[in-house]
Amino acid sequence: MKTIIGCIEEVMMEAFKASGYEEKFGKVTVSNRPDLCEYQCNGAMAAAKTYHKAPIMIANDVVEKLQDESIFESAQAVNPGFINLKVDRNYLALYLNEMTQDEMLSVEKADSPKTIVIDYGGPNVAKPLHVGHLRSAIIGESIKRMGRFLGHKVIGDVHLGDWGLQMGLIITELSKRQPDLVYFDEDYQGEYPEEAPFTVSELEEIYPTASKKSKEDEDYKNEALEATLELQKGRRGYRALWDQIMKVSVADLKKNYKKLSVDFDLWKGESDADPYIPGLVDYLKEKGYAYMDQGALVVDVKEESDTKEIPPCMILKSDGASLYTTTDLATIVQREGDFHPDEIIYVVDKRQELHFVQVFRCAKKTHLVPEDTELSFVGFGTMNGKDGKPFKTREGGVMRLERLISEINEEMYKKIVENRSVKGDDAHKTAQMVGLSAIKYGDLSNQASKDYVFDVDRFTSFEGNTGPYILYTIVRIKSILNRYKEEGGDIQSGQILGAANDSEKALMMALSKLNSVIQPAFQEKAPHKICSYIYELANAFNSFYHETKILGEENEDQKTSWIQVLILTRKVLETCIGLLGFEAPDRM
Image 1 (cartoon, one colour):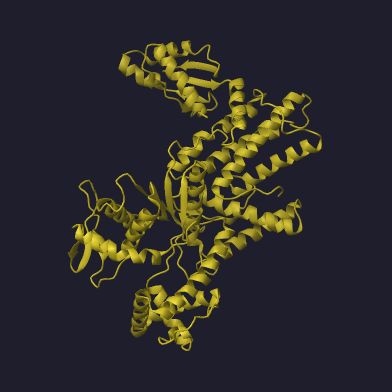
Image 2: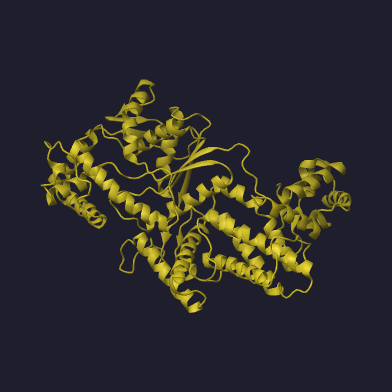
């Protein structure tokens, strides 16, 4: 379906053309004065310069051509030359009835679906997820869902930190604690144990201990470096131990991501890109893209238009070791070979922007990807506490994600029990659903690139611009529809009529804007635009609800119409929260 603003714009362009002016001046915007009108056209102001005519005269000419247009309730020329537009209530009803028959609720799928790889998550194995991992997971998941909704093939990759010194550190510390493990016997030729020699809790304690030792003991650090090298060369016991580390750690990561309703298609990591590095290095050398600079292998990526210094992209250090840039370039090579993506999106801390500028430029300059492949960076800000500093525990440490989720769920459980609408196990399940909405909406309602304050009290509130408020609105609609069915009403029949009052029209106008929100939100990688939209929609519904006795209406046609408006509102809200990555309970 065309957007309603697109339909209005077509009419306006035709009116400008019929009045003797260029149709390009018929551009329409949502009104910045909703008390006066719903849409406005300022084209007469621009046309005045072209036609050397007073803008109000041009506006009057155009408005005269609009008098018989069924799309408008009113079209008025206002000094000095604005055209104020109100949508006809019956036209709006026809538009919404068409929307109810569309399985996409008026949103058009992409004309040319893309293959898109989205790199988000980025946790290190053998380390617990903490609040610093929250934003990448939540933002990336929402962008992925939006893309799929619009018909694109979107492949989500967690891109694990599973290679390098951290693995050498774990292996070294294990060799000190359990030297008799068969993994450390170079002569061992048998099968390695199926069970890992550690639990995930032990693994999460081993890494920081080893890391601390390596900073205090040079010999220990050298042992870890040697273990890393042996692992990467393929030492049999170390590879078997690495497999155990991966198995235990990834199982725990999957469990915690599941609590966030975050799901990855690929569980690849730096280790998967490692085999591509030698070929990458040879290619860059042979083609003359890379050169030696103070012992390091680099590729120049600066451009004449740069206003600040962009350092060369380092491929290998002077000791021959690879870096994150090397791994990321090798990963691009791998993704190009596996998927030939039209776009690769990276959802990463905004402080990594320079790194990705270097990587993207290097990939383009050296033709690792086709010229028309998009490489997109979505940089997110920091999640802070009320003190404005990175969010921490009450004790001052980095908060584990598992603990944050648990604390939010406990807070929601208390509120739900106090509300007395849900009891027993259902209360716990409902608390988890509402708690997830509090976390996700609290994050996504902020523009991704900006830092924000994670305020538990505000985010778990049932009032204001929060996830629980959106869910409460959906639950309210479900309750009305259930009562209507209990009273013998048929929710499958009926048509939406022209708005009976101003609050209903405001709700219908909000519903009609869905398809003008989803596409731009995905193009701009901006889930916060969906949050803004559903907050506006929820407010419009609640105003209508408080002013209208829906089930008490005696006129059956009117009541049936309102029920259809409620059904559409519920569908739109549920579709949008699905794109944000959470769902609504039946009661709360």
